[in-house]
Length: 396
Ligand code: SF4
Image 1 (cartoon, rainbow, N blue to C red):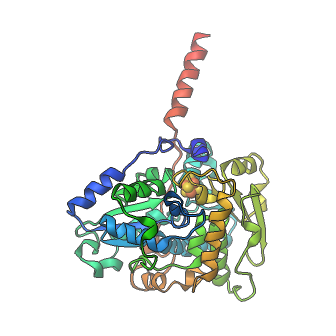
Image 2: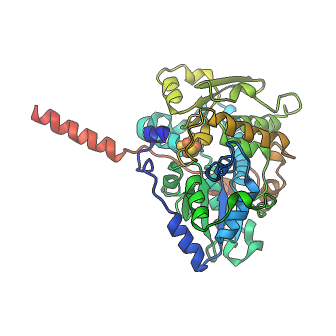
Image 3: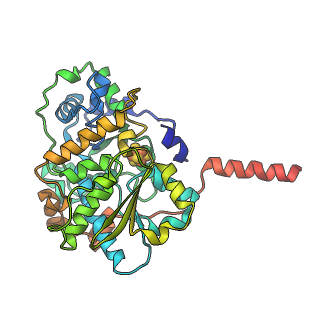
């Protein structure tokens, strides 16, 4: 992935395959297993099986995961809805004062890694809300919300084997971050999942498209689905922030000025909230951050390291179609358009989670389970370059 190569300091730019290990673990059936699937996967995996780009193959993918041996198939989108609830509340809290504004989104580990290594002055601006992958892992392993599924899911008394399928090589590194490692056992890319399906001789295209995600942790809204696209995280956030501010009857649900792949920076003025921006790729963010104007211009900024967002992630199928991002993006927004519920705060299972386990968004319990922290760090490559630089200067 060109974008990941720019931002990945940890070796995730060279994809470390885990699919053999995952298959072996599933075959032993030693532990109850659960898998979560990111929103960008369902609109791309079909390409690996000869389907047209932008074909939505959610049902086939779930069916294939069950045939591979997963006991439970969950949806990362559930946690994306929770991410919206936490991050929208966090934004409105920050808007009560002026500190640490604008708020930067933090669900892209490529972007977070870049900030930690190159711009530690931005750390206080990053949302502390965990990414959907990490939230889902924490909810699966560490709450009583899934206890009805079996003892393995009851507050970590026994431990389910938890796998995620992501469009992203950097998500493998994210799952190992200090403070949050252990909630996801293995991360697979979309391409790796396709390899597993092929290795087991499963006729993906012939599978029924009727299968659906298990609950809880499987119910989601259109807002979660658009997390896959550049601009989608911000749009989802605005829908719920407007609701929390009491503006949802007057504000638009769709923010078309934040959509698309043609522009590097996309901007919208949101009545009652302020001006927001979307950086479509790390190069666009670097350009914006090279000046100081962003500091006073915006209240919130979304950054996704890959152009097009996760739809252009390094773990997605490779394609020579010049319109690949547009096709995957159209499918993503079409899923949102027909979703029975399109706002995170309308997800009944998310509301049940807050009512039974978490005392509401940004509560003490929610912050303990669903938020994280960041710290300045140096990449091995950066340290090596500095070391060589020192040697050079000593010799000259
Ligand atoms: Fe990964 Fe998505 Fe970020 Fe790309 S935009 S690095 S795929 S999280």
